[in-house]
Length: 435
Ligand code: S3P
Image (cartoon, rainbow, N blue to C red; front, top):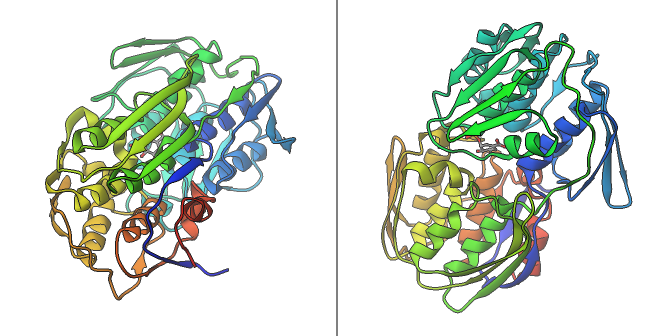
C-alpha cells in the first residue's frame, strides 16, 4: 500500500460523521478491562492507538470481542495479570502514559515499547510522580524516553502539583492513585481534558473535584473494585476539527458534523473559529454525561486572532489545523503558551512553520508558538510534504492544499490510521479528490 497521498484542490462541504473519540476510547479500554464484569462499548475508535491500548489490556488478562458493531470487554476485577511480552504501544502517548500509571501499583512488571515517534517523547514527566508514589520506572531511551520498564508495588498516595498542563500526566497519577494507600491529589496549572474524571464518576470510583484540585481515595494494592457498565464513545471533536476549518475558511461553504463529543474542555476551537468570523451552530442531542451533538459550520473570509493561556489545553491537538486557518485568515494570528506542541507526535511548532512556509505563508516561529501573517497567496509546493509520522500534520496539510490550485503529495501518511482511518474517504465524501 502506498504511504503517500496526492491531494487535489477542492471545495469541501456536506455532512460527515467522524469516528470515535481517541482519548475516551483508550480510557474506556483501560477502565472496562479493570472492571468486574462485561462492558458493551459502542463507537469505540477503530484506529491504531485505540487498538494498541486494547491489545495491551488483553495481554494483562482482559477479554475483548467485537460483535454486532460493538466492542465487549470483560474485565479482570481489579487484578491485572503479568504480561508475557512487552506491551507495544505503537504511536500512542495517551496509551503509554495512562497505562504506566495503571500498572505501577498493580504488583506486576511491565515493559513498554513504541514506534520512532513515541520513542522520542518525554516520559520523565510520568516517572517523577510515579516514583514519588513508590514505583520503580526505568527509561532506557537516551533522553528519558522509551523503552520503559515499570516495577510496581505498594504505592502511597501523594499530593502532586503538575509541572505542566497535561491531561495525560494528570490521568497517569489518578490511575496510579486507584492502587495506592490513602489519598492521591493532583493540582493542575490550567484546566485540561477531564475524561478520566468523568469516567471515574460514571463508575462510582471515589473522586472529588474542587476546581483544579482532584483527589481520589485509593483502594490499595488489591486493586479497585467497580462494576462493568456500558459506554457510548462520541465522535472525536479533534477529528471533526479538520472539516470545521476546511469549511469555516471558505466563504459560502456549509458543513454538518453529526454525533460529535462536545466536552467543553475539548471544543475551544469553536470559540476560535467564531472569533475569526465563521458562523457556527451547535445542537446538543444528548446532554447526560458529556454532551454529544451536531455542529453546523458556514464559512467566511476569516480574520486573525490571538490564542493563548487557558484556551491552549482545550485546543492543544487542534493547533496545527488552527495554524492553517491562520494562514488563510486576513491579518495576524498569534499562537502563544503552546510550548507543549514541541513534544507531541512531532515538534508541531517546527513542522507547522516549515510546512506553512513551503505553501508561501508568512510565519514567525516562537519558542512557545508562532505568529502568522495572512492571508497567504497559496503556492502549492513542488516538493512532497513529509508528515514525519505525525497524523495531525498529515491531515492539516491535506486540508490546506484543498485551498490551493495544484495537487500536492503528502508522504508518510500511514500515521493517519492512528486516529482517523476514514480520513481520506471522508475527504472524498465531502467533495475532495485524493489519489
Ligand atoms: C490527551 C491529552 C493531550 C493530547 C493528546 C491526548 C489525552 O496530551 O495532546 O492527544 O488523551 O489525555 P497532554 O495531556 O500531554 O497535553
